[in-house]
Image (cartoon, rainbow, N blue to C red):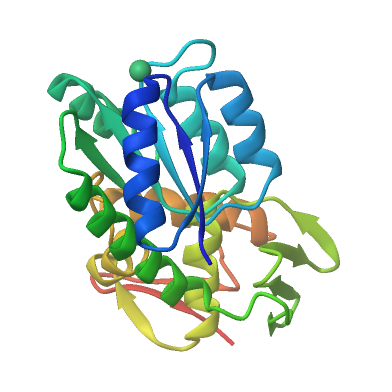
Length: 229
Ligand code: CA
């Protein structure tokens, strides 16, 4: 059963969301304070978060940012104002979807299901067995989402990890920026292909000895990138 955390200070809305989600067999928890919601989102295992933007204590922007630093689970942001949606996009916080109040509960449920299905395809459903990808000095623990470079652990953001993992799992294949963007940022309506370049640069800073002469992720001029074996 998928566990969902709703962080929402309007009790009536939170309860309505919960009722509909429970009808679809989800296990649902509600937190009405931003601070407590954030701490639960960081510490506990959830499969998806429905996040209200304006909250007492830590607001939805900050919660989204902090959760994204360490977790890849889908985040659906909820706001009463259309302008907020543009702001979320502009900030590039990594929310997976946005919904404006008032919304129909069945639409919310449909979106939750779609995001969970997509996320489960990406991470796989078997969370017990550690899956490793190993190429030369790089070891990637896909289950724990940890990366070791010559035995030393380096920290990666969610998207950096997804991108590195995807390239390392498809070595010697050239991918265009467009393909990589579609693959890694599929569910998001934010960002553009320049994001790919930025992420590749950050990954290289972590995995390459000399970023000017990359040994792992090669730039294929005019085409895209390739992970060398
Ligand atoms: Ca609110």
